[in-house]
Length: 201
Image (cartoon, rainbow, N blue to C red; front, side, top):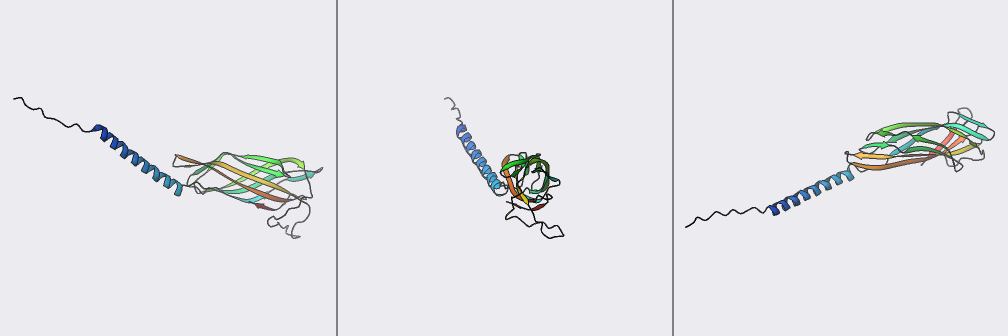
């Protein structure tokens, strides 16, 4: 009588691989859900906080019905995000009587997470026709001259438009486009170029 050869049951390799793939997929989905939850709760992108601290005209002159001056604007920019804000597409624009009279690109830079940056923009404005009949309305407090109380006389109004744009990066994987801006109406005394007041939104 011949000997019976032992039979070995082969493991179902196909089913084992399938089960491993399913477990791995479920695990990856779980990790992805956790990352998304953390992203939208802790690292959710937020808008920048822009505050215009001061506006000045260091130089100002009028001749032959035209005006030219140097414009300076001082702004506080706070990055309330938990990631670094890299700005690269920012500008400051001046509008008078519906026309652009000045423009400046703001150099690219970065603001660390939760930090505040103080920025100053100064540039010269080319001469443009002046209308002295324009009077400011609903502006902020008027600056006094220390002698005669509130300044009076002809004034002009310009509008400054500050726009900042860039990206906030989180965990070296996620990036989000962030934009912020502020528009200011500025009342200027045409007698000496002093800023009577400004109101920003």
